[in-house]
Image 1: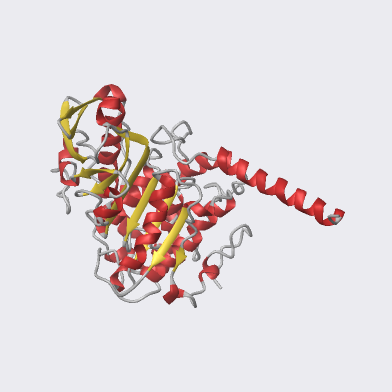
Image 2: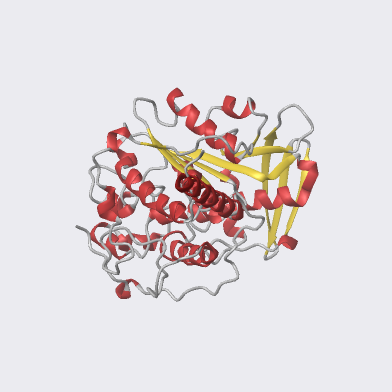
Length: 414
């Protein structure tokens, strides 16, 4: 005879696990719109002189006006809208919204051609698509530059996943000349626009194009990923953060200005800090937050990472390259993951910092981690383990000191 107390406990535990599973199922893996928070009024943001000093990492769940913290997932989209506004206002410039009636798209063989018309000017983006054998529709990864970015093509070919190349220079060059880039013809008044607004804008127009051409693309737009490495790793991160139609973001070695938190990087050595980054990628006015003024920034890049929640994010690091500030990236990823944890979906956010390999060259030891995220979030294999938190060289780093103030109302760094 089974023990009645143990039986009751097992029943209760089973019910709780079923409730957790049910809640996770109710939280979407991806959305069918670019920005679910577009309906909300933009918050009034302080001037530089009005901004308070916050030395630890800012609280991603704290409303911009300080009136309290997000308690329910249903409120997350409004908080996301606030974080996006802060990033645009203080760092990269506003990402223009394009009505669908301003976009035309066709499939020309295996190339997607998207034509955007704004203010009587036209910008055309061409993206080659490489297909597996079969009829589709296929899940796909948008690779910055070509293929799968810097990730091994074999991971995707073996899984019948299509690749879509994004030639970012069709929108803005690697080191922009302000006012002279293709996107400036459409938006001549937005001279402060940084590349990390312009390039994600281009990615979003490709996704618009896929929606417009429909089944003729042979792409399953509910299962889109994006990836890039180094400066393109930052690009992938911003693109995934700013467009909720991307189901999986893989940011490979994104370094400073990517996953790394500006505040933490400022405490390290010869790394890419806010004052030493490439300012063609950001608003020139962001320089006011350099060095000790970084504590006045009302957000940080753990919140850039958190914008991808509740969708899937995998950050890959390479601590052999000091400039990448991977200790800062580790702290930032630990902080960002708290958002996924709050909503009970921590398995959708992972990070892996592995040394002893070349820049943008994925070592074999990281293959299984990438494959797990691809299998779960592009192929829908729910039983795959994506609880990836690999960073053996940072085991002694006290990341909690940067976030322990969250929920206390007292932003001090101990």
